[in-house]
Image 1: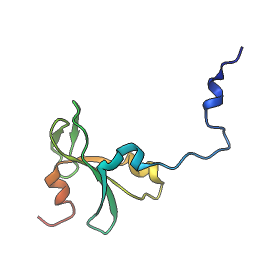
Image 2 (image 1 turned 45 degrees about the vertical axis):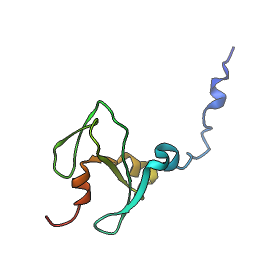
Image 3 (image 1 turned 180 degrees about the vertical axis):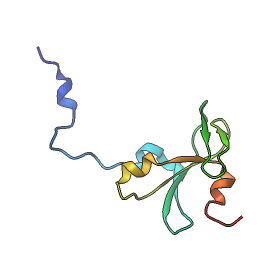
Image 4 (image 1 turned 30 degrees about the horizontal axis):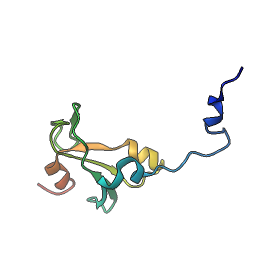
Amino acid sequence: MPSGRRSSKRPYGRPHEELDVGRVWGNRARIERGPRGEDFYVATPRPTDRTFVCPGCQGEISGELPHVVAWPVESIMGAEAAADSRRHWHTGCWQSFGRAR
């Protein structure tokens, strides 16, 4: 006897739903302008036991310390690709991103 599980899956011909940043990040994500005029979502993540590498200084970021996560609002490959490119930054590195030191 077939189970009812298959009926909950997305039909093949139906497109994916658009990524809803508000649903994923709630009110924690804001939009900031990047150094070349592009817009980024920026959020402060919840504490975690993971460790990340900051793309600004290549230093480690403990997930327990305050830092930011940033990703482009738009991507040539779509919203999901933009969200997949999110990176964890030291707050100071993000604030100086693209600016001469």
